[in-house]
Image (cartoon, rainbow, N blue to C red; front, side):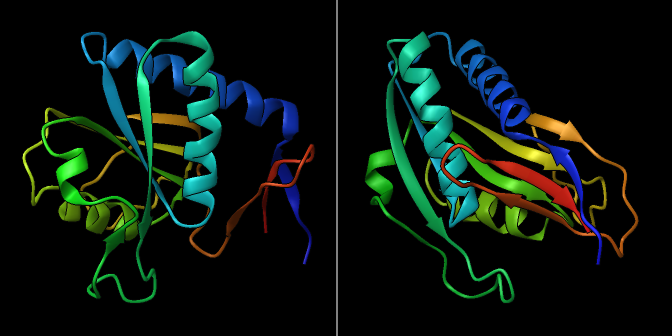
Length: 165
């Protein structure tokens, strides 16, 4: 099976920086925001965005890992921080790839159980194959693919890349 690189390490770095600036511009009056990354790659992406945000702003960034069983999104969703920590704050839910929207919409649903100031979503790659009415507020790249193709994001030290198979 051949793989086509759609984003190389440098390009992913640029996308992360742009997303960080967009997040900063969206929360101008906040002192703290929560970056909630969907485990595994979504959390890694959230961490990379937080590094950039810490260099460009004085926002307090709290990272939160969101554990969702992607094969069974109806099962319990857990977060690495208690709901009291993100109540009445701005949240950005982050994942690496937006495929059908299933993971993102169930993640959104989980956070709607507490009052929030503002809620946004961010992805590195938006595939435009949604079966749910969910969108990414911030995205690195939009990619029209066939439903048989898959996008994989790899975060390796010094060799981040995304490819299509």
